Length: 512
Ligand code: ME8
Image (cartoon, rainbow, N blue to C red):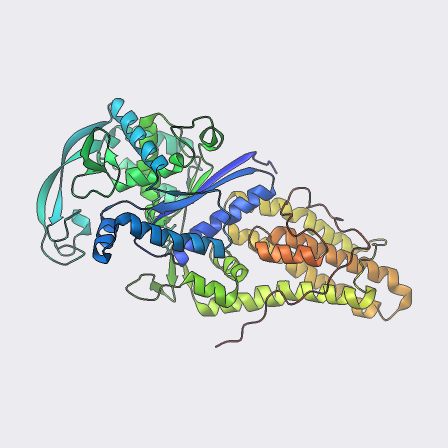
């Protein structure tokens, strides 16, 4: 289990013309679990998230509401930040593309690429909707009309700066081929390989049709195209170019950009080629997860079926939502969010399996030993088997976490929950308690059981920090300690420790 000394990971920066929903929560949550896991393993972690605030859509949305784009952004940013707080997201930095530090970085990278000869002024031709003042690509049009207002569009030319992306087709292919882990999962890698093999065209990276954005250095008529602007957040937040020796030196290239599959091409074609052109190192990995639908439907504001994460957290509890999202669907595949599935997971995995384990164990300890943990005596075969499984599970979970296989890691952890519950049934403490001659054996069983609970607490902490802290507190341990390394060896509990009788961790949800 090699521990990285430093670990840097990022979420996409979310648009402020939408309010946060369960899809945004999913990506951010996955990153938070990974960040907590890496910190638990002793790494120094930089976990970056933020908001993407520029562009025509935000400019327009603000206009219709009678506010400035920045006023709109300020308002929506608060909604993201308060949701992250509620979801227990412990990020290192929150970048907003409207910040000065970001503008400086975007203009610098533009200048560097231009100076190296890979940005040139040309003409951009596309379909223009005059009432909406918007350019659309051929594929965006709806029956030749504007996808926003439905009115006819006309072909128009606009002066634009172009990035010589075509020049980087071969270097990008070579990079993807030489680094099999660069794009994950594998199916996404194949998709991008065939896309790049078909050829890359130069990319228009500026617009003159709106003004809410970062001006092209030296040509203020032009605003830098949103994706060139947005992608640069990953290094502007680290202090590029003003503080090259600080976080940028320590954390770039980042270990993983976690994104949804919708923005894969931007992260695995545009971003790496921008970086190559600027002479900067490429991220180590881009992982694209799948797409959530809700009760079988596409999530969208207009369909009003957006699952409101604040409401879900209020109703079911933050750890239940954190668990469900990462347990229900393999990371990388699409999934469906349904209330039935959520309630089922809460009742079976959380209330029955984990909750019962903790409450049964502590209730028996309280009944048989007044809550004072006995010292273990000689071990029986069942005890050794359970210990052996705990010794193996940390390595297994580590391998799964390194592959961002969150659902597999939770499965492995729940196998241990199952093993501990089975241990109770097999070692029958209630029968031992009736026989005074078997008091020592009962002590060993109770010690083994509570130690299993402790280790499960260590394992679940990155996924469910509140639950991990509750388990620690019940066992008389410091709930603020979230370290994994140094706490995985069997025998961490001190005999004599007073263990509290646990309140149910997860109340059962009755079907509505
Ligand atoms: O694309 N299922 O921002 P965005 C799963 N600003 N994940 C989902 C989802 C769903 N139904 N809906 C959204 C942008 N997501 C750009 C990114 S990065 C330099 C700029 C998640 O607000 C998923 O991570 O549209 C997706 O990639 C992201 O939200 C898109 O967020």
